[in-house]
Length: 390
Ligand code: FDA
Image 1 (spheres, rainbow, N blue to C red):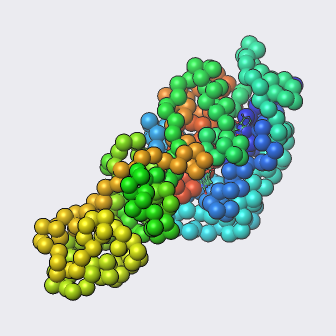
Image 2 (cartoon, rainbow, N blue to C red):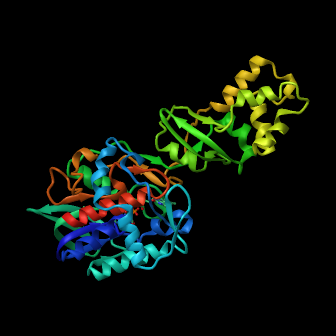
């Protein structure tokens, strides 16, 4: 069967692209191997879909070339998506830091995109196995379990590798390689970090403790909560820094970002009180204070802390160095870092520079957003841009 455009992957980027192309009068086929539509949207944002971020800018994205996403983000902005959401009467709220969530359910975003596709007469087929992609002259030929489809434009929107249990596959990367497009290295991102065995044993009793901290890796820093888990560290601050972390690197945690730790310890220099108890006034859970101070060899009374040890402890409070031994992998990662190299794509259209008619959009591209709605905004923006040009 002949179409103008075949879109592989009916997720966030694929649906946006298909609807946009269909609205231009293009005959669009949207294929997905999953039985259910857009599962990642459904499970996102704790079931409420953090669908965009008011502050989405190119410097909120990790990539070999973060400037690449400027054009798409300018062509389709968070305001454009919000206007669509409002047109469908979907109630939403800002949770924090510009993060917009549905009041009710992420299913509303799926239904909205599905309605847009229907209105644009997109032919959507689910549960279709893509067996092979090839060329017939200028056209792309897609062999599937439903038969052979042909189109002048092929848009690859098959997402990343995270959460394989709901349908993630490497198909998009394989198609890129097949057509000679380079990939940047892939790794799980927005993912919990794991402790080495020693730390895992030492801090295991702290699972569930959450603290407001500043986490740094190199020059990048995030002020958010860290959460101790049975295996290591999680929470928004850690998920954010994980997108920058490389194996073998330390992360540095400021446990008291609003306080001068040395001055605070000095005030307790003559005190009979155990430091672990005094730290209650810093809103530290007692079991955390006890375990952390014990690990520093400093669970003592204020008056027993010698000046040199006080300086060391203050330094450790502001620069607690943790050497993770890995991540919890794609099973727990929200996204995949790396992907189809932006060098091989046009930032204005998302088309491959050397393969006319072949487009890559969404997470399969080497653009990884921060936690907080940035990844969906990239999916909408890149999907829209490809939809206008395919
Ligand atoms: P997406 O993964 O959405 O779609 C890819 C589609 O391709 C899928 O439908 C898949 O079935 C299909 N596909 C894959 N392989 C195929 C094959 N071989 N043949 C045919 N079809 C194939 N982001 C955000 O901004 N706010 C948030 O709140 C969240 N929350 C969140 C929670 C969790 C648990 C996860 C895992 C992720 C998030 N994200 C997020 C990230 C966000 O879900 C992600 O960045 C986008 O869904 C990416 O959109 P894409 O369309 O590129 O891929």
